[in-house]
Length: 172
Image 1: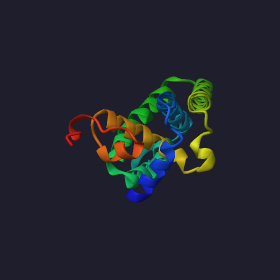
Image 2: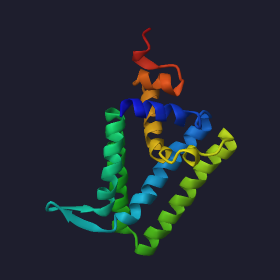
Image 3: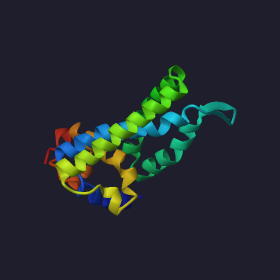
Image 4: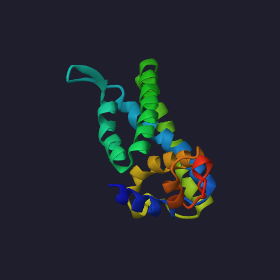
């Protein structure tokens, strides 16, 4: 999976060179993930005697996929997913059904619009997932990889993303 991930990331990067497009993706991906799990957080089910939400169950396959692509990035995304799943549970616990659906629609519109603006205005290129639907699942990995690079980790990914490695790993 590691070589597959590196090839996919290198391809994904070609669609995400503009810094403002990348910033729009950070914002958009978080909002779209929350929008995806929010309605599913309404339904609680018992799995092996443990009460959980359908959102958590639905997130498990993609989280496993991200772990298989890159364990460290997958673990970081798991942490972010826990925060977003918890936020969704709190929202569902406080909002009416109509309020939850309204918020979901707003999150989809704002998250999707940020993606479109990022590509049309800043990148001047259509979204990567139009050419390769697998890229839909690479967005969170790309965003987390950029974060790791900014924090001075993952020189191997900095080379793929075509940035200069930063931080303590830049000793050569």
